[in-house]
Amino acid sequence: MEKLKALWKDMVESLWFWPGLLTLSCGALALLLVRYDDEIKDLLGLDPEEMWWLFGGAADGAMDVLAAIAGSIMTVTGVVFSVTIIALQLASSQYTPRVLRQFMAHRANQLTLGVFIGTFTYALLVLRTVRTDNATEEFIPSLAVTVAVLLTLTSMGFLIYFINHVARSMQAPVIIDSVARDGLRVLAEVYPEEVHEWTESEERSPEEIASLDDSEAFRIRAAKAGYVQAVERASLLRFTTEHDLLVRMEAQIGTHVLPGEVTMKVWPARRVTGEMETRLRDVLVLGKERTPHQDLRHVIIEMMDIAVKALSPSVNDPTTAINVIHRLAQVLLDMAWRESGPALDRDDAGSVRVIVRRPDLAHVAALAYGQIRHYGAGNATVMISLLDNLADLAALSPDPARQAFADQINLAITSARERMTNPADTARLEEAIERALARSREQAPRQRPQRA
Image (cartoon, rainbow, N blue to C red; front, side):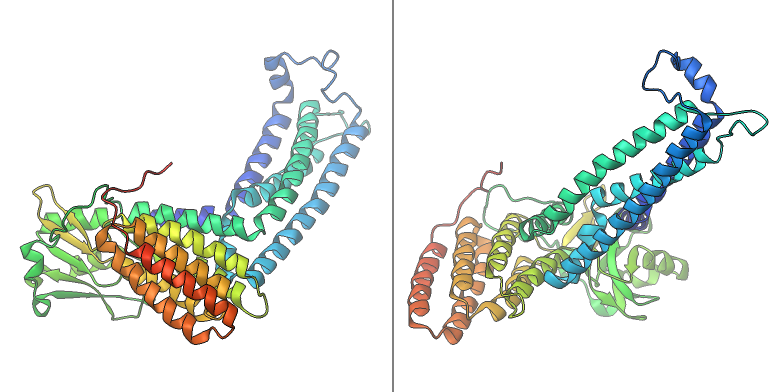
């Protein structure tokens, strides 16, 4: 199932799927309206003499209209493609190559291209069916020509929207917001166990997990190199329940594995046959690139890269970096109120069958802020914003999660003090440090903050 989902997402996020589907649909519509022009008009009760909006010109006029539509639409389509490519190039150089997925996957871009190409295809197919007075019998598909005009008007509406959309989608806050929403979506899928009220932490690993001996496990090795994009956990749970096995995933989502690398361990080893080994190996979805569908770290890297690029001397845009810091805090606060340890999949009897390793909060926080701290340490405004947001995270997080943010605060303080040289900036920094340390020591909340 996960392989099909990964394939489907790759298709719908490409620039060919929706344009291709709309082109085929418009082609089929053209053939249908031409073939049953009179029947459809009779069915709908359309009288050309009474319906002023229905095309009523001669065959030469119909051919001129369709030829004009096909020619102009093809020209505009070339412009739309050019604008799309330029937008992709600018986004790649201004922010990070990893945000190209945002533009390619955006439905507005795909539908705009699809509507234009579909309209061109429709007009071309209808044009070839029009017969003039010189033919044996004149044929004018008036309904099909009218629909061609309507499709052209629709295309103009999409063109106006597309221009506005491209101009807006190039803005940094829009891109950052889109990536942040991806992060919240991945969190809800990969870390579904929310903590609404904090209590004393309990040991989540049952005895059969604590006593596992790696030396007695059967090792499933990757057959090819690639990035782990997804795990078919539902299929794996059914399989392990059926054969009375316990599987622990060794390769996390987003990691790159080499041929022969251990991806999972299975207990007891004596029950694993050659056929079972093949089926277990196939539950991993490997691909040539990381995807954000189940990979939280990939989403974090996208946001972090935007901030690092903004802090580079060639861009010098600290405001964008601060915007990223704010949205990272939103994602990490949501993660702080979720169970981020290993995911334990159990059978109907309550026995653990699958153990899936997931990045914990400390690892994700270090990934999110490490590069920003390194490249922004000399900028007082960026570091003050970073300290304030980390302090807010520590103050709003449950007690078990606070240490991850406290560690990041200490690292930020050390980096900023080493790099800050201007006396005025140093004074502002020390005030922010005192404020952050005091805020982070506030009493931890007992309940999750209410979300709108």
